[in-house]
Image (cartoon, rainbow, N blue to C red):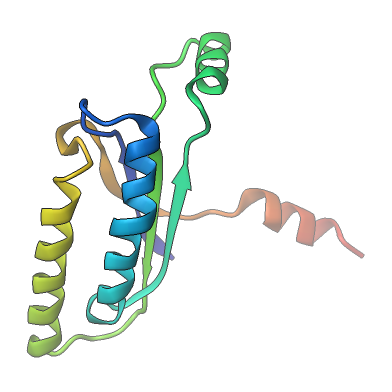
Length: 128
């Protein structure tokens, strides 16, 4: 099933702690309040660990700077009426306006993915 991945970088004036606090305690409840209009079945926030842990890992692998977090969203598979589509557009506009308060949108890739559960499938195949 396809779902949305949003790799988040904070606005430059925010600390990681400020960013994560706002995301968890302001934006998260806002998403929750619009979940029905959007047809969301799940919303997961993955907050990155402190910078020291990230820098060591990135240095070992030669990686670019880490994201401040990753948001993942899944939707119910359903047909939407024109009224439901309008409600979803309004909800998306509210969420985007709030995202501008804490996310550096130009530096935060957003994309749809198709999941392939390799390890789980492998483990299930190996069990007697």
